[in-house]
Length: 138
Image (cartoon, rainbow, N blue to C red; front, side):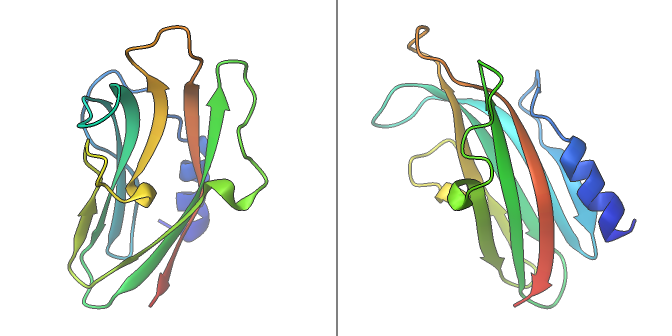
């Protein structure tokens, strides 16, 4: 699959999962990016619904993975779009997997809070687009 096709697939991706299973949104040149929506019971704060990311590098060289998040709130507006606020970047070693988990210790790049589960009156994020996935050599 070409990079243009992969980026196009990333542009079409919306987080509207009904199960807590990993779904691959990018798989090219030995790098796989997957996402999962999870109900997280957090150690020190209220329960939240998070978008978790898993990045797997099967190559023998370290990589830099970048992407943008486009969170759409309950009012249909993109929160922080067009700014660097939602740009993410991770460095991943050869043959390494980085996986977001339901923990406050999970690096910010591998998680994104969608909504509070304990407080029904607080609006949240109804959809998130993952766009502009780029993989480069470290």
